[in-house]
Amino acid sequence: MYDELLQKVKTELYNKVKHYVLCSWYNYWTTVLIGDMISIHPAVVPTIKNVKGVDLFFDGQPFDLKITYLPSEYSDISAAMRNPKDLIVWFYENQRAQRFGANNRLFVVVHNSKNPDLSWQLKQEVKFLNSKIQEFFSSKKVFQDDKVVFNLGGNTYSAIAKILFVVK
Image (cartoon, rainbow, N blue to C red):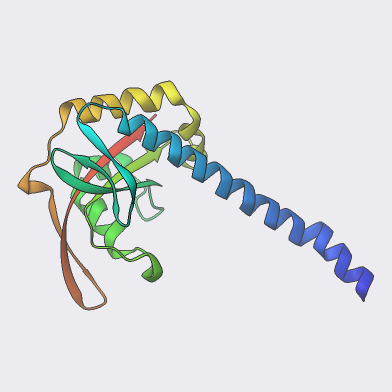
């Protein structure tokens, strides 16, 4: 029984833990990289210290940076890009309860059109990411139209939110 347990740890648990650790490491460092690319744009003021729910200021507004992928519920990236508010509301309304926040958010949606399962790889394409980030912050402003209203847990919330699509 003990030998069987050790074998399962080696063959099953080890690989699961290894995969989790590698994914967490990759997501953390690519988030830092993308955050750094955003923070050097002249239109962005990064926060100096950790402030819960505020990673940067853009056009005078505080934003929490969220780097994510197109949800499986959205099979058409073109439709999401045509109606970004729908996707933004979906992100707010489908956040995990323990990570709830109604603060302003900047969503960076990374998407590989040819193979969505490989979207994570785009986060390592530094030149491509940087060009999309620079283009976004050089051409966008915060408007009253960026206000979204969403419902969660029987309550109604509002926030200012923008979405940057990084699609290849």
